[in-house]
Length: 312
Image (cartoon, rainbow, N blue to C red; front, side, top):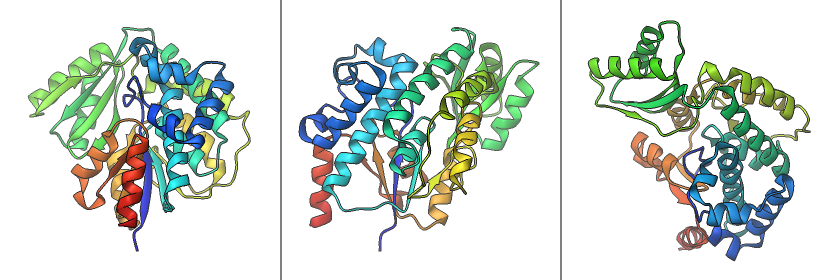
């Protein structure tokens, strides 16, 4: 029997037009968009379908928009396809979608929380002071050592352990540059500066986490109906009480995605479905182990094809 995991993307997966075909073909998806618009007092369809890109790219818009499309894809999929995941996970922001799918948060609470999360993350560091870069072709341990060496009193941290040989670093602009230079000298294949508005998942984000805690504590949490693998530990949550402390910590801690994929393999997951915009996570799973045979559900057509393949 197949053991399924559903995963949800993080920031960077957004594109103008996302979610349109879901809303046009699925009542469940349309209701998700209506709920988001109502919770945030903004037109989520207009933001996702028309942008413009500069508006969609603002962190406090990007985060609720991606969450909305991800949950719209999930609910439309669940109406059409009879597949229940054994595990859920999401990359950074995507963890909120996983927790909504698991029944821990109501969607309207989560979409409000991630809008605030985006705002707090943006405000934690003045624009231009932080940076992020992807380091390709070095072992994770070596990148961690390089960050310690390059800090020189500033902050530079591993932010995302995405896959073997792909680690994103984050922190003060100068420290990220020094770490990038050291990484190249140590034999990194490439160091790619990322076009981001803040140094996410570095210690510089701690003030954002503290502010986020106040928002999250306002919400009621439900029972977790499907195990969710946490970014901060790369292990399934032990209890619902751990969710808010972990999400607070997640803002300024690395995303252990490579380790999450390894844990899924150990737990017996053999098929992965990515729900929401983009195919970033599908690519990471494919590189990690082709046996996962990941499928990305971005449009209503993707759902129809998936259902036909299951029936066939």
